[in-house]
Length: 376
Image (tube, rainbow, N blue to C red; front, side):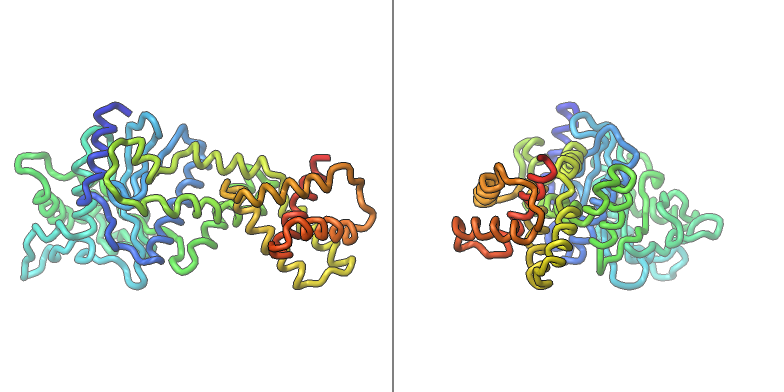
């Protein structure tokens, strides 16, 4: 990215009039937005792009660049959930219908979703840019040939009927200086996506599972753990909307790149499939007499530990417990019965860490013992 482009992106990101922050989203809206971004990352990575960079709450809800270091293209997105009914011409533009007797001031478009996204699009001069309105429901807009945007996705607004197109261009022209070229509707898209707003994460896990089944089949069973950790990574991005002094600061505060995404996948593949092995161990422990409630507690604690390990956010005490497990396991031989072996390791940890929950120590021991067995 050239210095001029860096500067332009930073300037636009620092200009609050180009963002969609400030209470525009409730919690469901935020979850919808973040899950859509994650689904988009999986879709992009499935075709192995050269690079990408997502910026959150900078130049609308999300800005997607084709490169982290030298982008030539940016797509800006408004990602809006709606609880019922489709988006109408009025709700998208705040303008009157083309044949309405009572006309509204064209300047009213400034406060509409399409007006706001066009202002941001128009401000981008250094990069090739398009603007995209994304929602879980369709946009009830008549298209040429009798089609409707609510049943087609994605749709460039140049395909609107001549009457809607002419009125939209006239309205958007009020948002730019006189004498400038007419607004280009081929650069503005509306799109309906299938992500359910009441259960976004389950949908995303399905996308992740399909991706992993092709890219790394042995890790497909870890799709939920991967989604949980990625959402924990991108969730806070954009929460801070303070003015940034440099693009690097903006990138660190609100950005997530392909290299970040690949790093999470690499971490997943580098870690043995511990949860799958854990399930086999717990089945064996159950057959040797361990109770169902105890097994459930171990499984829950192990999943939490595993997510922290993949996320890279484990605590110093986790390392201490892991070290104590490794010391005890050193020199041990393959046990004939698993439950006595497990109880001995558990008792060793409870002596060293008496204040820690038993299930947590059991889960730590199980994961370290499995790693010890895999690497032996």
